[in-house]
Length: 72
Image 1 (cartoon, one colour):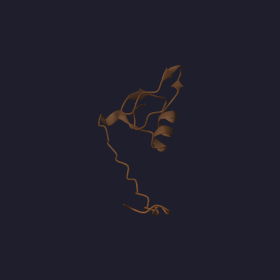
Image 2: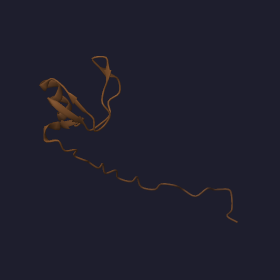
Image 3: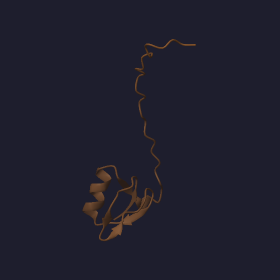
Image 4: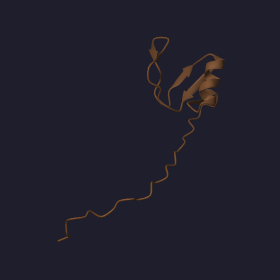
């Protein structure tokens, strides 16, 4: 089953490096389904690259003013 990588995986598979994000690799069905279920790949049969954007919440500001020095 051909899958398109949605993430870059370090290391190798069968002695070959994993394809970069957006690359396609042919895997046994069970392995492909595992990567798809984990969100690391998508089925490449449709020929489209599905672009996902991650939403990161900004942390609240917690800075406190420095003490001991006066502003000039």
